[in-house]
Length: 296
Ligand SMILES: Nc1ncnc2c1ncn2[C@@H]1O[C@H](COP(=O)(O)OP(=O)(O)OP(=O)(O)O)[C@@H](O)[C@H]1O
Ligand SMILES: O=P(O)(O)OC[C@H]1O[C@H](OP(=O)(O)OP(=O)(O)O)[C@H](O)[C@@H]1O
Image (cartoon, rainbow, N blue to C red; front, side, top):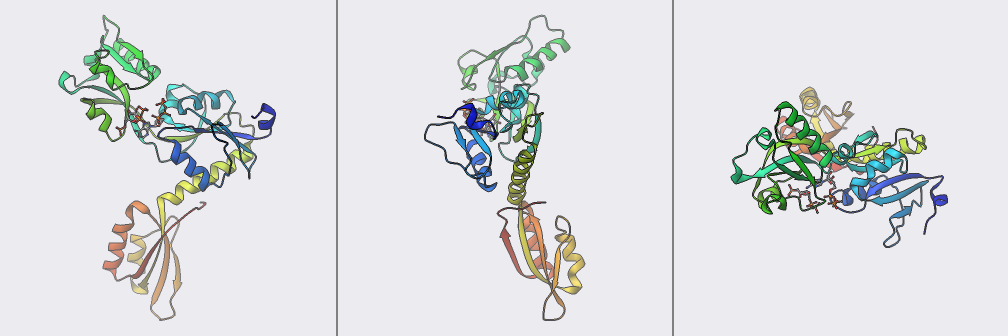
């Protein structure tokens, strides 16, 4: 058991306790070397190498706790930050948990425009975002009957089939859940990804900055690979156009005269195509290494 005194001098960092963001959040902690021991079934763990207490909370509760200062930093989705209307700083987009909050209607309904839903029934777990959107639409369309927005906490996709809704507002990533329920998207309300959020008053500014910087490094390292190749000195300008690097490539002369060795960071998503182009240019010994961590 922990008491508030155990946490009093520590920065409190909230992590989703389950769901889509859980695994990736743990990977970020590991990459940032925030070590901890979590006792079975306990939602609070003290870091063993930093003055940090970790709390494992439902993703949708994290914005409120960060906003009121119970928690200093948190990882959650931009969608739930908007839904909670939380007054927090979005410090860093984390590049995972991408999804869209969409209006979805039954494929057979013939509805293609949100305007067609005015006066009808909407079911969602995002009643603030959906409520605001449809209230505005009602106003624009001078609706004679209000659109109703009702809350359910899960299995939103079942609402149309159960006869509870004419449309739903829910998250879509691959679209598999939506299609399986015979639904199609007609409008996107929010595009979201996981984000690091911070309390605006920041009780532990230095530690918060250190953690943010470490997490930024882990994300950056995941986006880039390190590439080494040898190329004739006469081809350097062309090679630099292919791999300009984040600042500039490092160049070292090779012992055998007219060749140089180039080391450069390359976006992971572009590396295969860049290797093809380097090979066409006459580069040899093109090696690619993964980066486990870095700082800008
Ligand atoms: N299919 C998805 N792909 C990517 N990210 C998602 C997806 N679904 C949800 N997310 C993101 O993960 C967050 C948490 O959603 P998730 O469905 O994992 O919640 P949960 O912790 O299981 O809570 P709940 O009990 O409310 O379902 C969402 O707010 C959203 O930002
Ligand atoms: O477009 P897709 O890739 O199918 O993803 C969308 C689904 O993912 C989320 O639910 P999740 O599977 O996390 O379960 P939940 O409904 O229990 O939150 C979301 O609520 C959708 O139902």
